[in-house]
Amino acid sequence: MKERISMKGFVRQLIRHLARVAALVLITGLAAGVLVRYSPGALVDERELNQRLGEDSLAALRADRAKNASVVTYAFMYFKGLLRGDLGYSESNNAPIAQLIADRGPATLRELAIGLAGGWSIGLGVAISVGRFRSALIWDAGSSAIAGLVLSLPAALLAYLCLTAGAASGAVLVIVLAPRIFRFARNLLVQAYGSHHVETARARGVREWSILWSHVIPDARPQLLALLASSVSMGIGAAIPVEAICGSPGLGRLAWQAATARDLPLLMNLTMLIALVTILAMMFSEKLTAAPRDL
View (cartoon, rainbow, N blue to C red):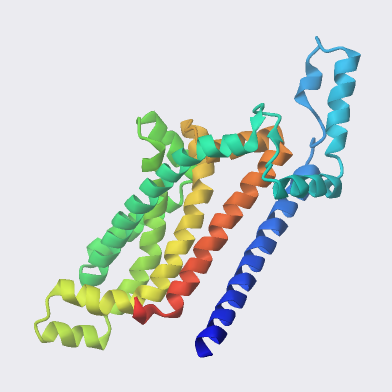
């Protein structure tokens, strides 16, 4: 009986989470549609500047634009097609949106994986060394100064500098994410290394690796898990200008092109996709943080 009740509770909780995710994603898509629709020049089609087009062609272009003039009408048509698995058609790319996402998605996932792995390896590694050797003020000040200098540079400028140096877009994401991860992790690990039980374990002769994995990391685990989810969002946000400047054939460059072309169907889909990934990462972090000692 208890197992049946617990199963019902699990199903209800799962339904609530799915409903919350769906509602947030749909609201994000509608907000993106409203912003694009009422942005300056939203109803202007660059193809109308082509002097070789006749009056009939111009009238057809304007009629096609008029279909998307009402956000409510377009949203209704979009979500109706979404229920059938149809993500729409991108006029700026002359291709179905589902095909564009399927073709461009792997490149962005690969770059994000490289950026997150490299950013966490460098950022967390330097933060651990700063926490362990807290008395080395020069190392702490130097690493913090370098991180602050990199953080002061826009991601687009870093992408341009790396492009001129021949670096790949994945390496740019590493440079963008590493100082952000370091600044948050540094404060957590310095505080954890300064705890009394860490000093007691070191006085008893416990090795540093054991202190790190048994005392320091568990103390900072909830905040590090939250930082992990935040780093996914930071990586997605940085991927857009990085891919646009480096010319990487990923979703970031596709989003940049859609924004410049005011491709409403494509922008709505990409915005909802980014919102979905961000929300799932935050929910995953919340679940892991809820019971940190059980990991």
